[in-house]
Image (tube, rainbow, N blue to C red; front, top):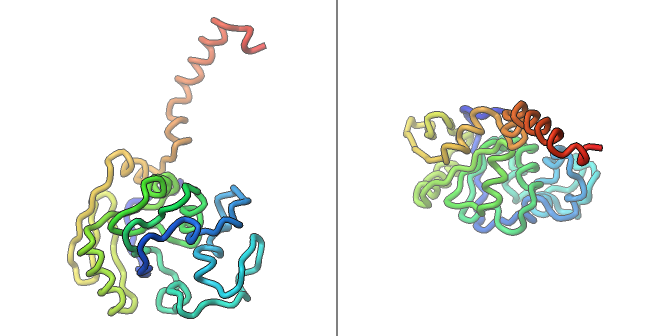
Length: 212
């Protein structure tokens, strides 16, 4: 997993509450478990005017001009500003895979679905919970100022606006350390590789028939 320490990114506003994981990545794309290649299908049913299927070339698909990701001013955005209960619905890990593959490293919202939030941390995305009033102010600022960017500092747990205002946020210490170190669950397990090997050797001596 790629480390996350700090970044400055263009912010794109998704002004809809209760965005579920089927909207983030529709069910027909769950056939693959490769973790990559889902970015072109992110928000597929909102982003395109036709029906998407795995393997389609999205470069010539008709796009919905009213959907925010299709607006030129938000091209290349790395921070998604969302409303409450983002990521609700099914627990599919494909949702953060699609967001990350598109280029989002940070999502800001008043609240997240618990499983989705955990999946974000496990895949290198930083989900930031802010008070709804603060999120409302950010929506106004983003929409009124083209090219609006935020500086995100995970180590200092703060956002910095273009005006220089500081917005603090809190992250669980364990999750924070994992992102800073680029450690997923496999990496954490491998930290104990020698202890695991020692256990296996002891187990083989005590119950050799299990290893025949």
